[in-house]
Length: 408
Ligand SMILES: *Cc1c(COP(=O)(O)O)cnc(C)c1O
Image (cartoon, rainbow, N blue to C red; front, side, top):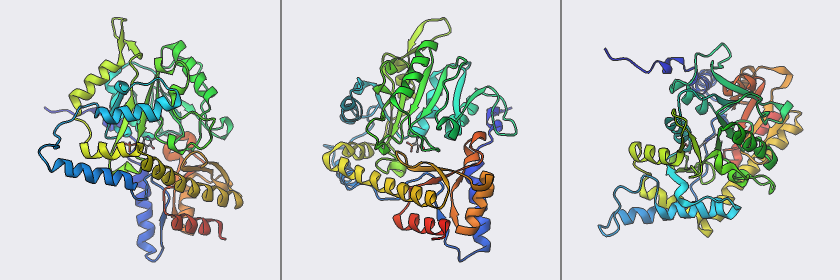
C-alpha cells in the first residue's frame, strides 16, 4: 500500500491567496463593470531591464552555434556569474565572501525551503509572526512541526511576534533556538534592520550555536545608507548565517528565475556524533545531486545586472517602485491611516482603521474602492488588524487606487 507524506495534511496555507482570488471573483461576478486594481500579490509588473534582455538574446544566439553551445552547466552556477555576484554584492560592501561560497539557483523561494534538507529533524525553529509563509510551510512539510491551532500557529515552532510595539523587529528570544528565519527589508511589513540589531542576532546565534537564515530578497530597495544590505556586513556572521538573494525583485526576474544562496565555508553544525560538519559541503552535495543548474541564457541575463547599463537600469526600476511606495504612503497618511514600511521596501503595512479585522478591511476596500490588498492575518496570527499593500504596479494603477481609497 502506498502512503503519503502525512505532514502535507497539516498545512493550513494555500489558504491566503486562493481565498483572496475567491472573494475577488465573487465580487467581480456581481459587479462586472468594476475596474479592480490588484495591489495584493508581490509580483513585479514592469519589463525586464534592456541590458538583461540583450544579454539573453545574445545567449540564445550562442546556443545556436556548435562552437558556443552550452549543455549542462555547473550545478553551482557559472564561474563568471558567481565572480560578479561575489565582487559587486558582497566584496564591494566589505563582506569577505568568495565566489565559491555562492550557489546560483532558480529561486530564493525554493532555496529557503530546500535548505532544510541539510539540517536535522530536531532543531528548534523560530520565525517571526507575521512571516513569509514559505518558511513555515516548508517546515511543516519536512515534519518539523505538529498540528496548527485555530490561529494557524503550528505546535513546535517558536513564533516571535512583530508589531508596531517593537517597530516590527522581533525581540531576541530568551530561549535557545537553533534555526532562525530573518527577512530584511521585510515581507510583509516593509521593516528594516539596523547593523546593531543584526549584530545582536549574530551574537545570539554564536553564543547558542544557532544558524540564521537571512532572506535579503529586497536588499536593492534599501535607500538609507546606514542600513546593511547583507548580514555578512556584521562581524561574525560568516560563522552563523546563510543568506538568500534573488534577481526577482531588483531586476524583475520573477518570471525569468534566478537567485543565489551564500553558504560560507566557515559555517558548521553538529552531526549526531557531536562532530562539526561544514554546511558548505552538504549544500554543495545537495545541489549537485538534486539540481542541474540554472539555464545558461538566464545566467547571462543575471550577469548583465552587474554591467554599467544593467546597474543603472535596475536602479531606475527599483526607484520607480519606491516612488509608487512613497505615493501610497503619503496618500494613506494624508487620509489618516497608520502606515508602516514603504521606504526601504516595496510593501506598505497599514493598521486597519477602526480596529477592523484584516479580512473585514479587505472586503471593505474591495467593495468601496475596488482595490485588492493582502490581509495581514494571512501572514500569521499577529498580522491580524494589519493589511499589506504592494507598490509593484503601474504608476497609473497606484494613483488611481489611492484616489479611490482616499476619496480625493
Ligand atoms: C519574492 C520573495 C523571494 C524571491 O523568491 P524567488 O523564488 O527568487 O522569486 C524570496 N523571499 C521573499 C520574502 C520574497 O518575498
